[in-house]
Image (cartoon, rainbow, N blue to C red):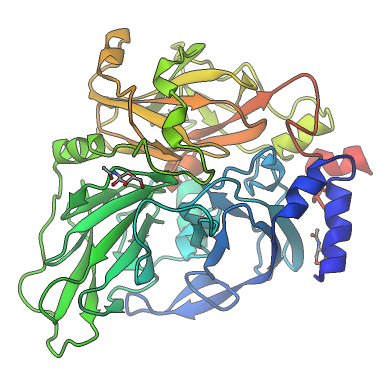
Length: 538
Ligand SMILES: *[C@@H]1O[C@H](CO)[C@@H](O)[C@H](O)[C@H]1NC(C)=O
Ligand SMILES: *[C@@H]1O[C@H](CO)[C@@H](O)[C@H](O)[C@H]1NC(C)=O
């Protein structure tokens, strides 16, 4: 698509207002991506994966904050396809979120042009396919968002930048994994761990220099511990928050999360192991890569460095050391700490309890008893065209109400500009990972057992960080504060893909009865229409 086409589309999208001017100030970046199947051998056997422009993982989106991304995605698979942009806040723009509640899937041999702006965000993010079990076949990639030139970040410019997409991996085809879930069974244990699509990748740097490592867990179900033999990692950024720069010899990264660290190659010149191993599993799976000093003539040696395996306390303690650097810049030139989240009283508390019920003889997953099922029409379009009966705003309660688990297309209503507390209560013995699209949120506390009002006394109301995906430990709770300042239809989901696919998700409808382009953009002129939205419109 040329710039002329783009401008026509853009003015179509934003035909009415001043918003055009604001967006047009920032540079455009144009991409054409084609999604196909291809064959690779990451674990020694040939398997079909999803490629983007022939690559697995897909191309890296390297952008500067507030760039306008115009990305024309061509689907050459035999199934409908969508990409979602994990952690990109899509301000006023849930139209581009790329999940089935906001977008019609792109049919085979068809295309859709996403237009979005990662606004006021700096950090390491990812994208991935959101339909079915496509994510098990690849199709994911990194979104690295840099600061604008005039905005300093709180660390010296590194000598290089490595992106590591790490995740558990199956040899099994995504369609077979999906049919396993459709038949009511759980997925088997994964077959391995991959870093950038490989079991043994290599990264080369110069002795004495400092490199940025952007580490994201793009797997389906397994928390990972990441470490580099003989080297410390200085944490500088977590999902857009500049952190207090503690050093760690290993880091837990849960499914859907990203961390950014600086590593100085300050050891004798040789090769060192890079390890990503599974947490809370038996057996333990791992990928071992190599950090190669450019002046090294000595291959990796010694024992592979060990890390935590099943220890939960270790992980909680580490999580509590993640703090916001209150004096560091954010993407905007005002200090992050100028917003005193801890001094605001939430208007209400939403208590979300996960469960793994059997419904109609099949394995399902639920939140407050509601097991989500996609509708035939994206919820955002149903809302826009006033199509009744697509979703329910009364099925999911804001705390568990007892009663048997049920299936519903559940939407939780909320008002624009509410400031809410959400408590994730995990009564299961496995670790959970929860994600909210369109937002980041303050992680104010983690604790064991049952959350009570008294648990608030342990909250960090001073300097916790904001992030988009948070872990909930076994038989424990995690509390977050969310400022609902982004109107739209936003997916809240388990980042554990089996759970998401089998119902552990819902949509948060952040709404204001007065429709205004200053709160939410108009429907894109190229929006695909499907289901009852196609009928309503034609
Ligand atoms: C599909 O691509 C063409 C250019 O090849 C573009 O003009 C059109 O707007 C795209 N379709 C959508 C729905 O974005
Ligand atoms: C926080 O950021 C400031 C400003 O960039 C920096 O000077 C300071 O070292 C950082 N503090 C910590 C504890 O990381």
